[in-house]
Length: 145
Image (cartoon, rainbow, N blue to C red; front, top):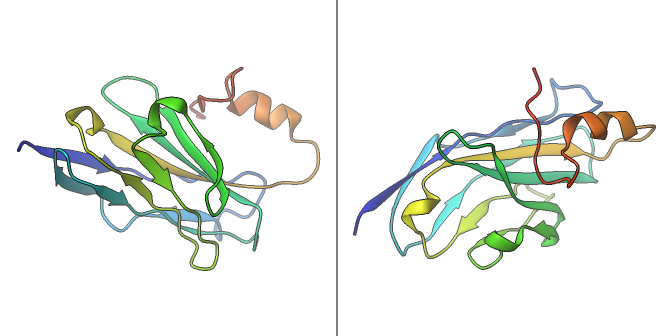
């Protein structure tokens, strides 16, 4: 079997809070697994909010824009894009601040950079903020410079 090289890059999206306390952490930068196998990509996070944290996973291959995979609010609650529902899963465990991404039945096309992003629930008027961050269909996160 051909080994797959799956790169993991974790990016923090910390909206409206103290970024010194809010971040995502990665244990490893790369994972290698065989086609047909299973891999779990770690995503640990720190947040000044005890609950109401949203964790997002994205996949970026080649020079393409990142694709939304899934989001989790707590446990298995959240959304998963249709093309990823069969083989990609995640469970948010707020007690250990973790939301690992599990990819099953690995395929060569799974070789990519994977992003884990933290977005806590914020209060107040966030309409402008979300307008600037998300595409019209709320599936693509725009680059912020």
